Length: 471
Image (cartoon, rainbow, N blue to C red; front, side, top):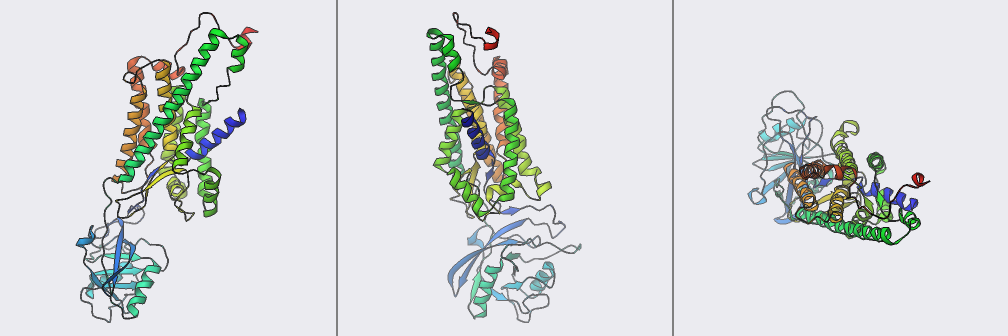
């Protein structure tokens, strides 16, 4: 039993270590890059569809500069404009070729980004595309302290995309482009499905946990009536559940933090593959694992649940926001995305493709955002059944509603933040704990919920006492 208990705790730590609502950023805030008049844009991703000799070709993605006007958000409003090469290629001096509204393609280097844009604007270009010297994108800022007044859009393309376009133009092929930056939809159907999956998983797990607890209670009542004390002593610890105490709730968050840092430091393609093979979790398998954990691992009372969720609340905030001060990036977001592995992220997530999002990507939710609140929701239904409370006067319906609303607010915040990862427990925990504590205090059940977590079941003819007291 102790081995099984240890295995379950390890599984709980692993699957709950990454908890996050995520959609992928299209607007990148940067507090380091300075802002001033004419140089205060956010770094926004830009779509660059291309046409070769009038036929639609590849679509590339660039990033807009800190300076220049904003781009259209809809493709139908973006003009198809001929693309021309700069001569000289770096566009640090006036181009030799005459420009009449073309988009100019230039190389990075030899002068500042703002100087390239000013030269291109004076030469008659309608926009400037700067080819990076690496395959990644680079944020273009204003180097000087002077105010900037650039009236043409400027964006950077990765090296492979720029080289491909440059090769076409060098072969006397007519290339035209359109520049636009579509906005994400307010709500994507992927988020609706994720919400239903998370709520449905907790619903199923709670009923399974409550049904099992009720069966155990019935068996114990039968033993109290019919069996001897020796049988009671043998069966007292064989229920098959793992009850979390206050100390293990705190240690769980510490261990989860250590595991998250290990994921961050060791994140690579092979490490993600090892996790996938070891745990085989994702999609249906992940939901099955969550339900199993919620059925076996139990929160015995509201006190332990409050400590567990309170620590998890601080854990989420620290590793999403505060960790930037130590690691210069959000550890939780890096791990969830799999930025260092070349993969789509760790397998301890539920994710669904964003169907109506022009930028594609996935909406994800961490297993921890389902398991940890789910432990308290499952506790509420067990308590209701053991106290014979109906759905209307019980705590379960309120706990489920609080979880659903908290998760809904998470997705609202996610969309308001342009897809920047949000710690779901930041919103879910106050909803659940606030509802539970307020309702318990109002009904006069708070003391029982906080300490015992279940009603007293008096037995008139059998007095259960600890062994040491009987001896």
